[in-house]
Figure 1 (cartoon, helix red, strand yellow):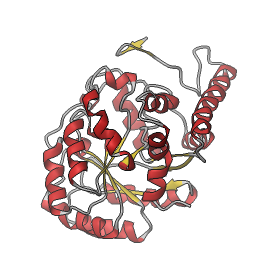
Figure 2 (cartoon, rainbow, N blue to C red):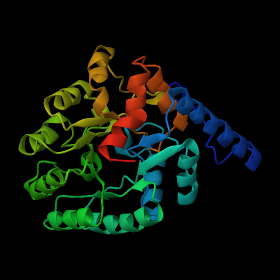
Figure 3 (cartoon, rainbow, N blue to C red):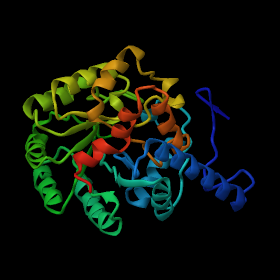
Length: 319
């Protein structure tokens, strides 16, 4: 099957014959490919700031949404490459040499964020290589549970403006943004309009947040696709704004929302504020593809080392 001009890849956990042996061989080959990439750069490992772990029944609903070609997917066929149980997914990331990853979770309605944050506390306790992740939603109690999450050790937050369908500049969130800025806790925000626009996506709404809280450690997911250049401008204006590479430059995304090559020098200049993100496990291609497309940009090994490890190690003060 062809997806946006790209061949559909088999999941490493399955095969068309149903045999475990081809699946195991595929996983071994994929692990070797990622290892070659790491070792070629002399990296001790990778740090992926955009991976999804959440309660299993919630994640299964997310997968069902992708399977049904829900409107927020842009109506594009989107096979989930790493559809496996939680332990298997975490184990595969470790096999890839990912030494730290996140549990990007997000609510789509009031009353959900605090429950997700409770689950995340337990997941962080039993998954020491996961950066304890929390989330938020515009509701009257948001500042209270954001403070609770920070006090419980949350090291990164996730905000999904597209799925949550809320204005990040909503006054209900103002105290929470201020708290996170003061605590210097980074926030990964899906605020770009890809793969489908939302009422409050684009640089304008999140730009109003930054105008109020210029010290907020904001990590713009997906390089802000498809408004790449607008979000590069935000990063150039605000020294604490960073961008993650999630799905950017891949064959899948370039067919829909190509990154303008004229903007590559600007991305290179922000090399100390670009972080590796993958969207694992919800990606329609092998994990190594994200790494290789960054390599083929030709921005140099120093840039790649910073993006794939060093920038995040510094941001999260990893030993």
